[in-house]
Amino acid sequence: MPRADTGRRVCLLTGAGGVLGDAFCRAFYQHYDIVAVCRTRTPAAPSQDEWFIDPLNPSEPLPENDSRVFVVRADLTREGEAERVVDLALARFGAVDLLVNNAAHTAMQPRGIVDGDTALNAFDPHFTLNVGVPLRLSTRLAQRCWLHDDAGNRARNRNIVNVSSISGSEVYPGGQAVYSASKAALNQLTRHLAVEFAEFGVRANAIAPNSFPALVPTEQVVSAVAELDAGTMTGGVYGVDAPAATTAPAESGGRHARPVAERPG
Image (cartoon, rainbow, N blue to C red):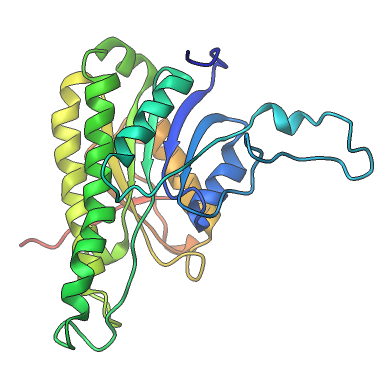
């Protein structure tokens, strides 16, 4: 049976053990009911598997443990795993308000796409996790939760945030061709999701951050996800750049993301 309603929004987050996923869980575990999907590493937030204790008084309950994330271990590239994750999330919380597709495969081919078969071998892993999994999770959530709940979707402002990359619209050296192509595909998938899911009141956007935490603070990227969840925009791909270069998307009044300018094809 679904857990009793806490009043918080339910977030299904993939890649929860990575840099961005971990930071999101630590920042928002008391604000969202988070289904934290990870393959190996778990986020540094209280969960059903681990929780905080006071080393000076181990038996004393801590309020932080009242808001545990729900960790689900899954290899989303395996057949049936995306469906299992969706079913677990719905069984636990009854619905999902925010889907954050953050899990990603990243492998560079620094000698180029014609050096042996490295780029050819990299194609399937990149497109399976970076494009196929977000499509599958979005589709299954729509089929099993959102499709016939127009009023609920609009009342809860349900939406999808896909974590893309600035590489999806720019060309950089270092062998990013296949990775960049997968992120460009994710950007276009986001736009199609926005158009089709608008029929039943679910929004879809993407963030396209510059390299983090090297060039952009991870906290800024986390804030961009939260801003898109709180806003009303849909169908956008929003860049997240160094603080001095950021401007806000007009729809949200936010400070951490800006529309990505796509070059005409």
